[in-house]
Image (cartoon, rainbow, N blue to C red; front, side, top):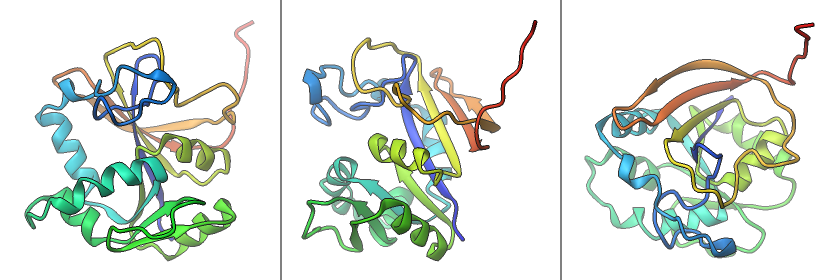
Length: 203
């Protein structure tokens, strides 16, 4: 059975919206799109390349899928480790409205998310990777389906935007499984989901 591994970019104030470009996601009048770009150094690139060495399949939310599908099929260099995996491996997109995905190797999943994703994990050899797709990951965390979270925190505060751990998130405990800080100051931390929080008192 494959592990479900999420990689998510957030600001210091927890915003995950539109890390990659100004027009990526302008919901709510968001004007800060592209905030992760200035921090994309060699250390960051190495981490991303390592992550893309391990997938067996990809699971994406509709918004991230549309962004990826408009870009990666045009990247045809077989030596590009990210493009080769994204274009060559099975892709699953959670959507109730997408009917005719144009990106080769895409399957739309509908219906019961818990049942569908559990089945996907069971038949995936290697990691079932979720990139971006913040709203989908929030749902998967709430359902207890995420095994590992790569949380990349960028040294910037935006003050507005959709937050990853929003009010109403299911209380969750994580076990730290490794991490590093890039030269540009991005904190890359890997956490394994470890059930519910434990509580105590200093009194």
